[in-house]
Image (cartoon, rainbow, N blue to C red; front, top):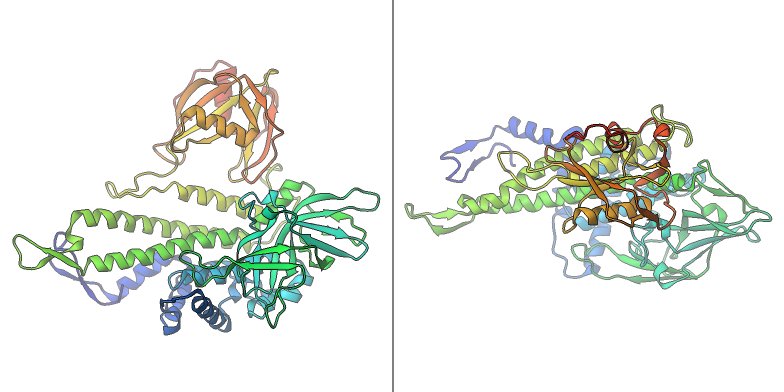
Length: 566
């Protein structure tokens, strides 16, 4: 709020104008802004300039041109430096980089997306997945906007399921090149920011196919490759590249989203971003991380900063809308009051207060949570990375790469944020965390028990999760068993009990079912959520099996009394 200004509160809330001392308002703002409040204040000053003010853009051509001009101004002022390490030309302030892009959403969401793609996704992929040869060749150019790029992961057929991407990168040892190809219609890279016109190069995620001497070519999973897609001067598609424009995207007129198809495009072997996987000139594949699933999620874990930024930017844009709505409600009058000649302020109507005040309360909660998430991301990503296969000192079975720990912590925090529910009852958030969950105690014919290990929380657990809207308990149980273990009950599961679990919420309850009759519908494969699984005998339960899981097993198998608490 403007410093030192008095605001007349709605008549139903106060009778006099309240004068806000300038120092108090600034202290309040700094508290809400958190650890990087200096960065936020600097961004506010810069975004207050005429060039960054919200503007009407009647066409995508005008919108895209203006956003690109704004991006160049930011780059010239060193606005991208914080997102890159000192040895690569940046400052290495991860938290400041996230906050800076988040603040851009308060000016123009198109500008936020364009900056996030160029410096966060494209630049982040090259810095975090590449090695020295890539850093020297590209990073400073990316910071300065001398090299415009895009992040080509999503395909028409696969978005969230990155492991199933269809684009291929096949190594040809005769020419020491990779051949990038889109073998199917669904392998087209789709809705890629910058691909429609501005990007000259793409960070392309594709299945790496190669074979050493005497071996049969196989896929070693999804890896990232640097692929030129346009000539630098004219912006024309290079041979074998076909791009197209997705045109206007709702709310983002300044972002040139596009599609890319590859027709046997050849790139040098050195264009593989090879921090976590490399190919020798004879076609031999090598990696510092032996487990393919662990290697894949380590690569994705390095990109978690973008997810944190998107969440914060969405909240920032929503706060702008909420600020406009609140200020309007404190000025707009409608209908005369029975005992007053003046018309009534919108904010004096209870129904209007009930629409806005819970959202204001939620925005405060989400802001504090985002501040904590940014701080955690900064601390994890600026810490020294341990060796990919070394334990972290707590559990030798954990995923132990520094970036993987960052991904796990970030996922845990985001899952917690998803539990916030709008409401302002008794000055408290209405709820935190899920209200009802299911767990399955699956017992095989040999008496062994099926357990899973999640990427975002430590220990071994019974498979299960939250009950989605519209699901019965059995529906949720069947779905979770399929998702986490490729298991399917062949007879009605038996309800063991309902348990109160207040570890996250005072309203969280868990239903536990015993499943003795089931069939395997496929071999469970570790994925983004489930990193390990297995059947265990009572005398061979993992040491870090959670206390609640052990208690349920003892109740069912050992005949111990059933408790009410999880």
